[in-house]
Image (cartoon, rainbow, N blue to C red; front, side, top):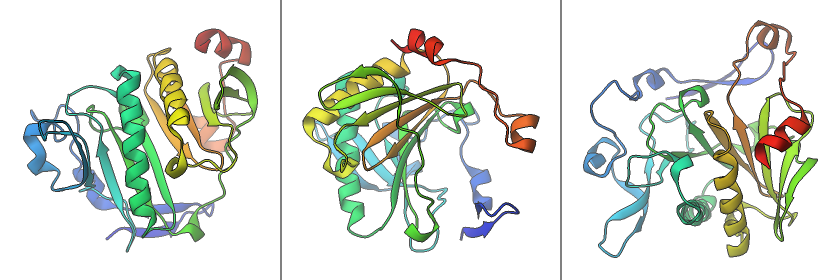
Amino acid sequence: MNKLERDYSGDYVIISPHRKKRPIEGEKKICHFCPENEKETGKSTQELKNEKGEWLIRSVKNKYSLALENEVHEVIIETRKHKLFRDFDETEIKQCYDFYQERIKQLKEKYEYLYLFKNEGPTAGASLKHAHSQIISFPKKIIKKNETAINGDTLKDNKETQTIIPTNTKHSYEIIIKCKRENSEIANLTEEEKTEISSELKKIIGKVNYDYNILHHDHPYHAHVIFRKNVWAGIELGLHIYVKETTINELRGIFK
């Protein structure tokens, strides 16, 4: 059972020794997320199937869960093919958004706070290459209010969404794709919103070849993409002073 504690600064820490047993890319000859290895992940909690009855996307309980007691932690395996999310086309990304939406609608009936996120690449925290995201629930009382900066330099203004280079950030490469609807959340995204978000995500994650995280937040819905080029070192860890190597103008040139 995972245990929740606070560190010396007051931040929450989950003590989870079984996480050491997670499969790491390259340590075994098999990929746990490929179709022939479903026994490694267990029964699906939800599936999207093709006309042949084969799953295209499936969610499973995370065998190395970080969930606290009475909470949930699932992995969404986003393709049958052994490939990265950054290699998806817009249709495949939109299909993932459809799946996220349906799974979250189901889980919302039981859990009060759900968080959807993606880690892609080892420096972003992914242990396996095969494209996947994760959903985890927490008691709402322990969650800090999301203070993501969703204002900044507008890179692109679409009908339903905006792509923004956020200001006052810690990371050198960050982009936010947000819905204009203030009450938007993953569970109520429209078809047009999902299509625009998918199109913008495809463009953004293809601009630089760094590992990245996608953090999904609501009200308004926004996908926060953080590229993990830099490693936080002594100044960042010891003094909480962060070094950023890019300017807004440089980022505009990269992501335009």
